[in-house]
Length: 87
Image (cartoon, rainbow, N blue to C red; front, side, top):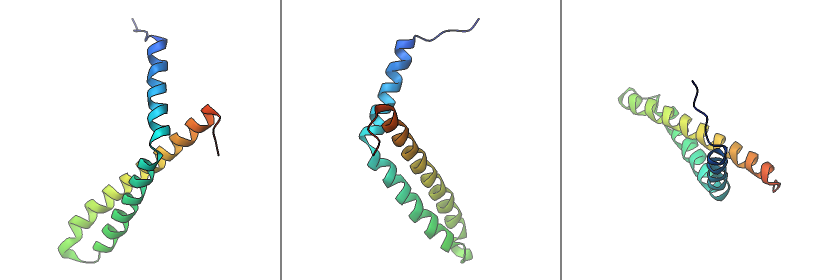
């Protein structure tokens, strides 16, 4: 038997996420910029064997930061469209 969730709870969860996304768009920008910096520095570190492992991790973390920043920006735009406040 499947358990049904309370629709008001789901609506409240959506409002909380929407509010967080709408109120903190700078967070997504910061994640993206930090990710870009780690990505570039990590990529350059591939040239030297002594720091290649650190470069790999910076590359991976930078890629993750860029992805999360882009995903957050997408959520901001979706929330703005939902609220009718799209620029």
